[in-house]
Amino acid sequence: MKTINVVAAILQDGNKIYATQRGYGKFKGFWEFPGGKIDEGECAYEALHRELLEELKIKIDIDSLFCTLDYDYDDFHLHMQCFLCTIKEGTPVLVEHQNALWLDAANLDSVTWLPADISIIEKLKTYLTEGK
Ligand SMILES: Nc1nc2c([nH]c(=O)n2[C@@H]2O[C@H](COP(=O)(O)OP(=O)(O)OP(=O)(O)O)[C@@H](O)[C@H]2O)c(=O)[nH]1
Image (cartoon, rainbow, N blue to C red; front, side, top):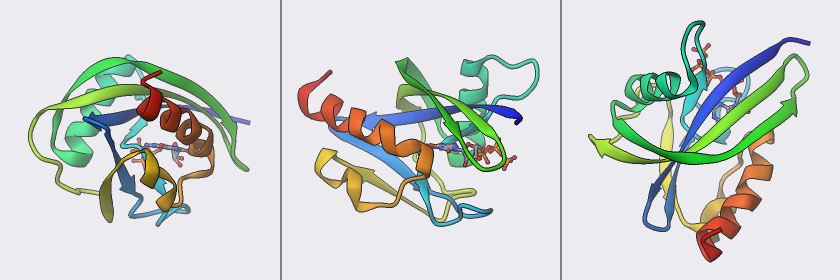
């Protein structure tokens, strides 16, 4: 099975995280962290800066790696690196996504996350409530 390497931004503003809703494709309507595939020749950081500029028209600061994740979808293996980030410049504009929400720990379960993201959500709740 082919592996795709993806980077995702866990955008933080105080105790809230930015969730975006996919606007196209097989998982249209599911919620995710903004980001996308690492292109050939790019490092993870370059890919994340590029994706956030393309998808949301924002410049970000990448603060730290929150987690890496491996997940088997039916047709590919996902390897995803998730970074804690903050917005450096701009206000998000939804170029590809159909909706977006700032969610705190109590509301993280109020949307339907992509299957691979469910394990991150549990970890994020602990991080947001206990700071670890
Ligand atoms: N961005 C993002 N992708 C995720 C998450 N969780 C998850 O399973 N994925 C999967 O990772 C892949 C990322 O691809 P993408 O479609 O966002 O990437 P892209 O913008 O480079 O793609 P495209 O232009 O080829 O559609 C998708 O298959 C998506 O379902 C997540 O939280 N954020």
